Length: 135
Picture 1 (cartoon, helix red, strand yellow):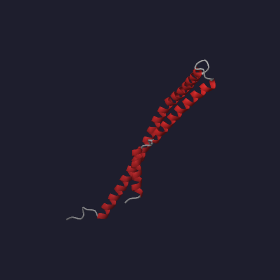
Picture 2: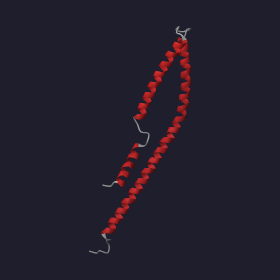
Picture 3: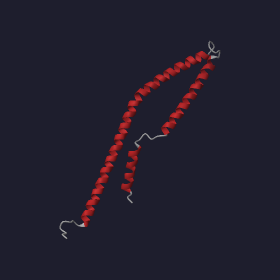
Picture 4: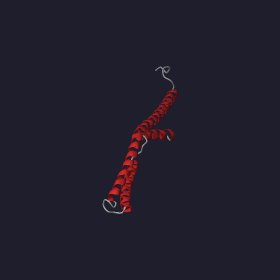
C-alpha cells in the first residue's frame, strides 16, 4: 500500500471541519438574507394594501357619520317623535357597540398570527442555537 497518495488523517479531519464551518456560515448568511427578503416583501405588500385601505376607511367613516346623523334626525320629533338628544344617544350607543365589536374581532385576528416570516426565522433561530451551543 502506498502512503504517499493519502494525506495524514489530521489534515483530512481539519479540512472536513473547515468545510463544515464554511458551509454553516454560508447557510447562516443565506438564511439571514432570506429573512430580510421576506420582511421587505411583506412590508412592501403591506404598504401597497394600506393606502387604498386608509382612504376606504376614511370614506366609510364619513359615510357612517352622515348615515348616523340621518338616522338620528329620522328618530327625532318630526320622525319617530323622540327628542333629538334621545335619538342621537340611541344612534351613538348603537354605533359605539358595533365599533367596539369590530375592534375586538380585529384584535383577535391580529393576535392569531405573527406578521414576521415564521419558517425562515425559526430555521435561523435553530441554526444560531446549533452554532452557539453544539451538542
